Figure 1: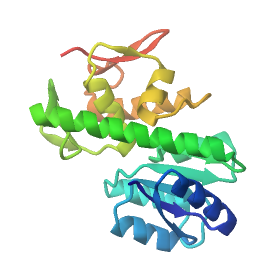
Figure 2: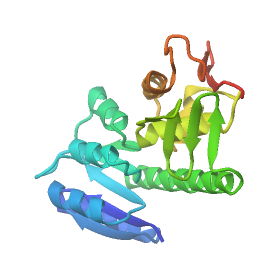
Figure 3: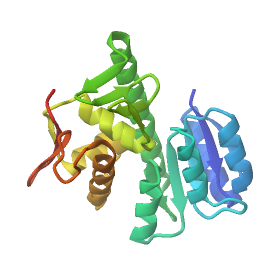
Figure 4: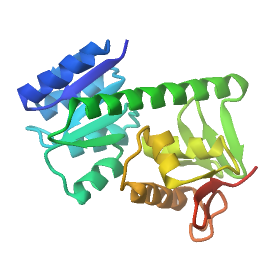
Length: 234
């Protein structure tokens, strides 16, 4: 059973989301205040947090930032009445797994929730299988510890967001394979975000800044011009 936390100050929307999550067998807890929601997310384990952007107490952006800052990798689906591109980019780039603008259809909401669950289940299965053989991936001076969810470069810890870690693992497990931006969105974000290709670019730029000795001349994440990206072969 999946456990979901819904942090939404609109009681009608919170009830609608909760009922449909319960319909697919999820156990749902609902709160209407950002401070209470953050405390609950901090104290208990959830498989998904459905998080409104504008909340009393602490807003959704701050909740997301705080959770990611403490290496909490719980998937986050953000809901908001704001629809500007800047808001969408900000929500995804601080570590949210997906972003849905109100008003939204229940069908789209549930499609995205199920996509997140599939992605997480697949990633967990991949990491568990890899960990049975070897709990880390070593490429040159870069080491990815799958059990601890940690990355080191030349022995020094590299701080990555949950999405940056997922993206790096996806690449590192498939060296030499070329991915388009849409393929990366489908595989790592779990949903095809039309018009969100720039999000892939920005995440890769930030990853390069953290793991490459010379981000302008990368040795790990390589650009395949006119196609997408690939990870250097070991």
